Each structure stands twice: as structure tokens, then as C-alpha cells.
Length: 343
Ligand code: ASP
Image 1 (tube, helix red, strand yellow):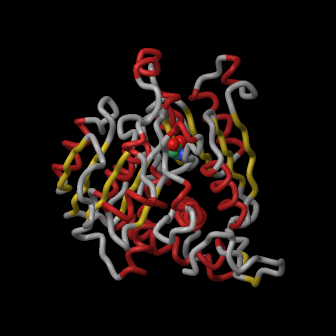
Image 2: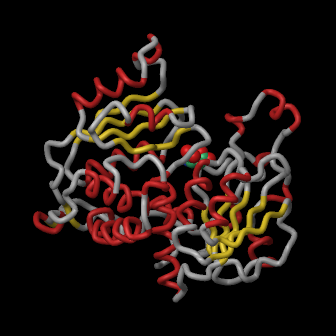
């Protein structure tokens, strides 16, 4: 595995399986039953130049749960980039302060450019419409856990990716990752103009994914194992697109009726979040909130053990985790959310 995590393409299937195994060993810590101090003294630099809740906070929490501390900066306004500082200079400066760096930036390729100026491990927390590799890793970790519970395997699975497949970086990373685990069927459903880039479809097809593309959800998806739906990435639209493209049509909404009528009792629903819960957005419907097939919060919870595993691997402490485990001493509720399924 490379010293950085910039793209899924730097990972082999063995690397991913290894990260899944390390993440599973992180569960007692992520679930707040055990404490480790294996990264005591280490400092993470969290550089977020785009909006983020989950990625920024979960990388932060994952590093803290390993015993490290975090320095955070958000937005361009309060960073020296607003004074014209280059990615090269920022990278070198931050590397003098931090042992690992997570960076999110609106420009595709910018995190890779930043990483070229440092020997400190850099994790791509999202580079514009490019990639979001840690999200794909927590997604595959989630799929793997859900499939184990349901007695399924990834081999031969049918995955439906829907929404903004053009600008959605999470699906760009996820489809690359799925292509390491084929043979598998992937159906792509997006509104016209927001299709998955053709070059990416060619790449993953050549690796053995069987891809079908559609422009609506009005089909029989009763053999689909995972519905992975995404938000329209309006912030990446050109002026012209924003004018011609108001909101997602209701036809693309994944809701209880869609799941009951077109999918099956074991189809799981995922979303990288945030879902746009304004009614006019027609994003993933809240009427699924009490349905155990909705895996979105199990998915966000899984961000912690997977991001801990990524840090442990890049900072080479994964063999030391179990050595200094202690019991948690504070109150932890039995289930975290009020609608959580009992598994
Ligand atoms: N949180 C994800 C991302 O940063 C998905 C999204 O914003 O829609 O790419």
C-alpha cells in the first residue's frame, strides 16, 4: 500500500481485505467498550477547504480514539491559501507540525499535488468531483458486514448506484473498489446529464464489472442487493446547468414504496450522506427511517473503525492495537439512535 491514501486505484484487493480485517479489530474501541492509546503523542492535521460534517468529524474522532490529538482548519478564509500560498508550501509547513494529514479540497487532483510535497501520510478526504477513497472503504466495510449478516457474498452481487453519478466522488471511488471484487453486476441510474463518466465505466467494465445504464428507476430491481443513492452535487454545477436543472425529479427518489414494490426484503439502502431532506430535493426519503433495510446510520458508524484502520495502517501501528486495551469507564447508551435496528 502506498504511504498515502489518494485513490482507490492505489489499493489491491488484498490491501482492502486487510483494512477490513483491521477495521473489525477496531470495533470494540469504535463502539466505546475499550480504549487504546496507541497513537498517544501523534498529531493529525485536518484541512477541510469544502463543507463537511461526517468526514471531518469522523477522521477527527477516529484519530482521538486511537489516542492522538487533532489540529483542525476549515475553509479558505482562515487559511494562508487566502493569501496566495501554494499547495506545495502549505503541505511542507503542515508536515512540520503533523504526523498525518487529511485534506478536502474543491479541485480534482489537488490532494495528490499536496501529497507530492510531503513524506507524511496524506489522506484524500474528497477532491472536487474526483475521489473519496475512505468513504468507499467504509462503504465496502458496510456492505461486507451487512452481507455477512444476511448470508450473502460480494461475488455475484447486484449493486444499484443512483443519483448524481457524474459529480458524485463517492460513487467514483466505490465503483473502482467494487471492480476489485468482481464478477458483479452494477446498474447505474441517473438523470440525463448526470451519468457516470464514460472513461470510468470503460475502466471498471474492463476489470469485469457487468454494467447496465438506465435513466429511470421504473424497472424490476427485485434481485438488487444494495441500493446506493446519492445527492445531486449542485455545488459543482455550471451556471448553465443550474438554470436547466432545477431539482431531482420525484421519479428518482428512493422511498418505502420503491423499496417495497421494486426491491426485496433484504435489499439494503445506503447513501454517503448528507441527504438533502428539503422536500423539493427528492433525495432519499425519510419514510424509510424506521425500516431496518435503511443502513445509512450503520454506514456512518462504520466510518470510525474504517478510518481508525486507515490511520493504523498508514502509521504502522496495526499490530499494537490489542496490546494496551483498557475498559471504558463512562456511560454509553445500548443503542445510539432512537430508530436503530436491533442488530
Ligand atoms: N459527503 C459526500 C462527499 O463529500 C457526499 C456528498 O456530499 O453528497 O462527497
